[in-house]
Image (cartoon, rainbow, N blue to C red; front, side):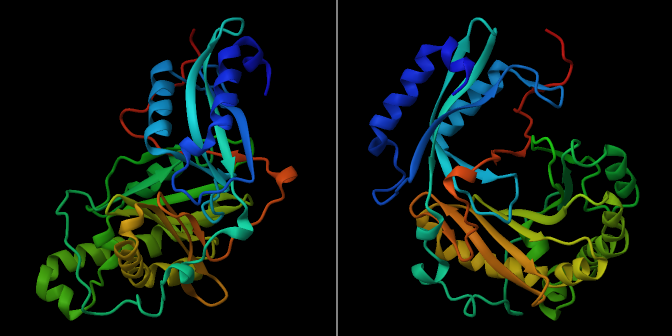
Length: 351
């Protein structure tokens, strides 16, 4: 487990106690782990990107894990379902290294035993989009915002795109937190579920919201097609993902496109309202499971949005096409997300 565990015996004792009493930490009675591992999740030391978390940020992280849980992603790739979750965590101190760190126990799942959406009664033909669909508009000042990691994409690239963004786009981008030596690049557009699910060209939309609102929505998607999608090709040879990120009933929804081809990105954007309507109906159906995340992928072969996986508190991970990794190859398990105002990352390198 590394030298930090050697410096802080209470960390090792904590991990052993959790593993010995794992039944107390299960989300649901049928939850099964193929392996439990103690690990150092994060520290107050300077990382490879020259940043460090404050002790307060680690305390908040421990509280969040113990109250809400934290899923284990693989290489920060939203197309890969979580391979497990952190079941419990504790803040410890290593006196010789003079750092605080999070000691955590993660439980790994068997990808072959994950339920599919059909296993829980979801037929995606029945949750297809239709013109009668309605969802409440939040009436916020901004309906969309760019999200990105400065370790993957230069801030200047983002600022250039925002110079001619329509009024419904927040002029201040949101920073995401992903730490990896050679990460994939993810360009995120955060948008209200109303904006994604509504079809501004439909008669019903015009009757309910009027021409001004329709024009604002149309301007947003034109900006994506004519400005953003063309620039994404300039991000280089490293793998690039584009995603719409939204939320509905406390569930995060991701719509991911694994391509920088302008034509494919435009096709995905033009049909996003159908995928968003489908997602709303799935979340309504799974609300009793305390669904936390739902991911769709735009399939470049069929040119359709297809559901990939979901995470729930009552059923665990649901995955139609699970990505399987052998236990001895499970490296690069990761955590990350969009920073909020409460998150604290020190970039000063000062003691």
